[in-house]
Structures are given as structure tokens and as C-alpha cells.
Length: 507
Image (cartoon, rainbow, N blue to C red):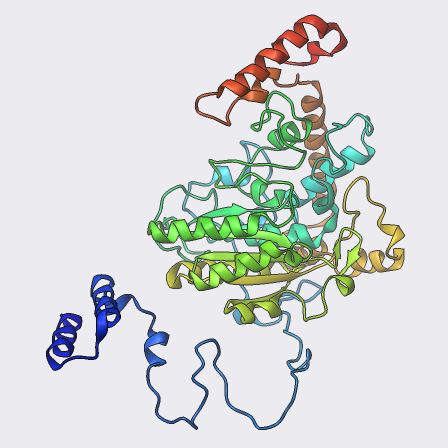
């Protein structure tokens, strides 16, 4: 009505409005003034030409001295932590008071249908001391998994699809495992596929409403998120071997997991492609009022890609409920951070895009948990993106084809392994409360390795998927060109089948 009245007044008073002005008023009436951003309305007030700049692209003051801004004009962004390296809580007010089944699963549950999280009714937390559970729990399963591939009974009998076999670097990185598991710990046990509701604080008795659904977009070094969500160890192995049990039907590189039921988007090989994809998913969820938040994992190396810039900028300008979780572990394969960027890490980039940002100790599982939990809450409530930079260190090689001793010293690696290992920190925390001891750890390590080796041998014995599955799942109706290729393969195998190990494939 206000727009219509203004238009009538201008038309009545006169001349001078012009066709373009009338068209603009019509558009404003159709869209509604309420849809215009408040900041844009504020820019229409000009109290004084000498007061402050009115340029629409920045918020600043005038100066009369020529001076370029130095890169270190702001001191380094601080690193938030909850525990010191001996597992002691520094500030009691920051203690998440994680109790009951969530604590032993915080660094991953036991894999498979008998995981501890599956023994607890969905939505129920128990305010009791945690049962005997390993510091790092499934994180140790992951490390045993990697060790089996490198040093097991058949270390050379591995798939030839690529060098990055199985759960490569994140199993020995230490800090990376802590980051993904600590952040996954706030997703909510099981990640209920029900939208709506608010989460009750951990440690309270009684049922809780399901938290907002959290969809994960990750890189190939994030299996901890999937394992926390009860993805079976057998399926991890099946994907890496590309056998008949692989949900991807043997058509992906190793460690490229995906699971629709667990809201885990399938990993792709190109670096940083998950970043704009995650923003698009978050924007779609926002438009659908789905009460859903998306979390995107990547490393500091991926943050150098153009996709990172596009993703950050779109997320900020479109106000998307997405959490960017960057694990800064010091090396992008063999490229150290000193050659990767000159600024203050990745968190320093957030304010430039207009993104709320924080830097956390990636070796402190509680710091990661607190930061991600709060980011998730606010991302949904406020419809805005958040950037978390988890500072850690990659202890192991990048992959089975990488020899990290060629670009870093053994002393450097030993320092992080012995002095600042995230699993050791959590172990100190549990031991200090009498919830864990050396005997329990020895027995648990033995049990973990046994589980991994059993899954390893089982995956190795299973046949490969049927070759015809090469042509399925891309189109709802197979196009003629693809059908011709399928028929050509069938004729080729019929004529030369004896030259192929077809007995290793499902019929």
C-alpha cells in the first residue's frame, strides 16, 4: 500500500518520474519492501558528506594519510581449547560435561550392529559415569585398520585402483581423527532422519527432541564421521576392495565412501569440489525450511582452490546454514603451510567473507565438540555460515605412496606423536577420573585388531561386482549409446572371456 500511495503521489505531482521510475515502483510493489536487506535501507541516509564514506561495498572511515595495510596488522587468531596436554580441564565453565554413552563414542563407536550407541534408545542420554571405553575408541579401530593394510599378513594383496588405499592418512594423523570425531560427536547419536526440534543438553535424563539433521560433505580423509554414525567396519573394507558388498558397486576409488541413510554425501576425487556442493545443499535446505545444517570437511590445502573462494562467498551472501570445518594439519601431501599461504591460516579468511569464524585445538576433542555444537545451533537458528579451523598435525604419511621423511624430520613427527597426541590427551582425561587403565587398554587394543583383521579377511574373500553394473545407476532409462557399450562388452567377454578372471566376479 505504501508503494502504491507513493506512486500515485508522484504521478499526481507530476512530471519528472519517467517510465523507468514507474517501472521501479511497480517492481518494489511486487516484491515487497520487506524483502530488501536492512543494511541497504540504512545506506539511504546521508547525514553529512564529511561524516563517513557511503560506498556500498565497505564499512570504513576516511583517513588523510597514505598507508598500506600490513598482513600482520592483527595479531594471530587465538586457539580455543578446553583441555591441556595432560587431559586437565582448564576452565570448568567450558567443560561440556559429556557423560553416559556419548563419551565412549565421542571418538567413534565400536563398528557394526553391536556398537555402544546402538544399545542406547535413540534420544536418550544417561547421567551416569561412562562404561569402560577406550580413549579414542573407534579411532583406535581405524588405526588398527590402517596397520593391517600396511603390515598385515597380506600387505601387498590390496586393490590396484589407486595408491590411497583404505583409510590411509587419517588413521595415523591423530589430530585429524580427533577433529572429525569430536565434531561428529555433536551431530547427535544416530542422526535421526526427523526434522525439527531442539537438542537437550547432554547429561540430562529423559528423552530429547531430535537435533536438526546434519548432512556431511567430506574429503577422502573423513571416515570418522561415518563410523561415528554406525557405518559398519565391513562396509568400509568392502568399499576399499570394491567387492560385491560395496554400496558403490566397485565403481569408486578406495576411501570414497557414501551413505544416503546416514546423510553422508559420497566422496569425490577432485580437491575441494565438496565445498560449493555443500553450500548448494545448505541453500536448498534453507529455501525448503528443512531445519537442516550441512557440515563440510576439508584441509588447508583444499582451501587454496578456487572452489573454496566460491563456496565461502556464496555461503555468506546467500546466508546458508553450513559449517566449514577445516583441518589444518600442517601439510597438503608434501606441501607445508609455509608454501601454501602467507596469511594467518584459514580462520583469518572468514571475516573477509563475512563468516563467523573460530580456531580450535584440533587435538582437543572437547574443544572441537563445543565449537561444532555451538556452530550447528547458530547456523540453523540464524541462517548463516560458520568456519571452524582445527589446528592439528598429520603424524603419518599422506598415503601408502607417500614417504613423508623426504620433506620433514623424524624429530618433528616424534614430538607430535609423543607430546601432543589427541588420543593420549583423552586417555589422560579418562584415567584421571578412574574410568580407564592400562590393562583395559591392552585388552581393548587386542580386541580392536581382531575385529579389523576379521573384516579384512572377509572383504578379501568376497567376489567383485557383476561387470554389467558398470552401466547402471546413472540414467533412469539407459540411453542407446550406453546400451551399445554394454552389448559390446558382453560380446567381447564372450569371445575373450578366458583372458579375464571372470571367476572373481559375481555372475
